[in-house]
Image 1 (cartoon, rainbow, N blue to C red):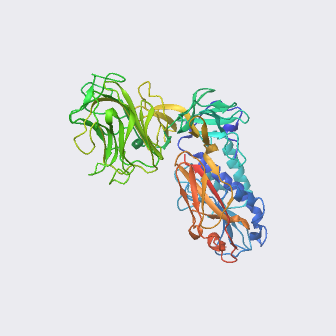
Image 2 (tube, rainbow, N blue to C red):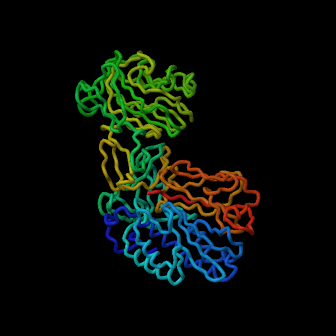
Image 3 (cartoon, rainbow, N blue to C red):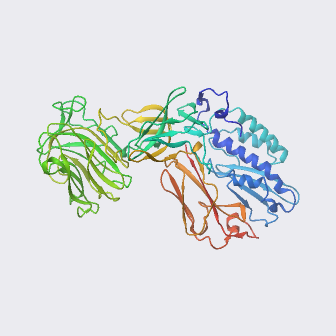
Length: 625
């Protein structure tokens, strides 16, 4: 491939890609060029009657080992030493059959190039037809057989066209930087205290910010610290570009979403700042919340702004069915409450089942302290039958309340201080509603109060240790990389703000220091390299794409025949398979590999099977946008 614009020293800091329209050049030309180069090298394999004996030599071996081609196959019609043709299949990229066939015969040898999206050779569907015309012009017959001299001419033409392109192969990513002993990204460090670092001091870290049709290229040439992270929490690290050469480093507890649409089911933010007397509740994340009884917006009291929600204590409540069943990833719910009177048993927050009322309830206990009951089985308060905190709420004053679960421990906070804890890795039981200000299954336990700034984070948590209560109104802070507009957006569906920001990794913080960091892969590609495997074993590989929009290519091979690759996700041997286990890891579960594997089945041979134990594997992940 020619040098990409990111590697050109004369490239300006801003590179427009609007002229390329919808043609994904990197999906067509780049892969096709690899096929051309592979084909030229493979001519050495069809010199003589024993063409099949040359497959273990270089440079073919290096092409297979580097993942440029996926597998080497023989046709059914031939024998081991004199196949009718060899077939190099390249299956990463645009869907379809992309292959090179090297035909050998008693009278002639020729190469057949095949890139099929439909039924005929070089049918590129809605893609650019330049290569189609080039191939047809150089073809000697209807099967598009190409001689070596014609192939030379075709490669020259294609490379000349590629040299004129100016587009980044991978956008919105960390491109390059320091690596560790396993050649994996090592540009994040634990830093000092609760401030992790980007390590650009020894080896520069290069980033490519995408913002619609424009790319902004920046280089970090010194170590840079992120703003302090919340203690005892997981944070997602990002770099923001505010201008040429101007970068800031911060984090968010909210997992960054990627896709053509934003999943609103994980968040809610209601300020209750609106029109006095209003009865319609507005959630920044489009959730449905309703007042029960005659609950309203009231300007009698407000924490921020001019109004808050008012429940009169005689049948009023706030209710939603948006959040019902917590996942093992946790949750976090916080709000401000101003009770007009303190009475034991008044309901602050409750999740209940269909008829039992069991699930999760936070009420006022003796003297107005926080009290909770928690059920995971739906039939009893088995996780906590009722525990009181120590600090009472203050009547006619604003109190900040938070409940969270990090997947291992439930916590309740009052004004940022931990009041209740319960260790459990089990989520509370399935529920049918969430209610505030009244028992979630009856009309009792009413609370007269004002409520402001309700925020719900579902599937993640924000605090697992004491914190300082918010000193200002909460703002929507979701992060969404819109893969259709190719733009990072921050806020909520009610008020997205486009920004030049790249997600670079995540960090786990302890009480006072950073416990671990994980860096996003360079150019969205992670290669595990070959590792030893045995039968009936699970192997977990950390790729940390940071999201689930990625694909996995996995192979098995025998160390005795390293050039013959067995795709794991295609005709997998003896029950071997690969599973995606979230935005961080992929797992391979091997089947029975202790017996000889018949390569004849895998490589379509007619005879002379290569029997050997499959004892090595490789997993490659790449993002899909």
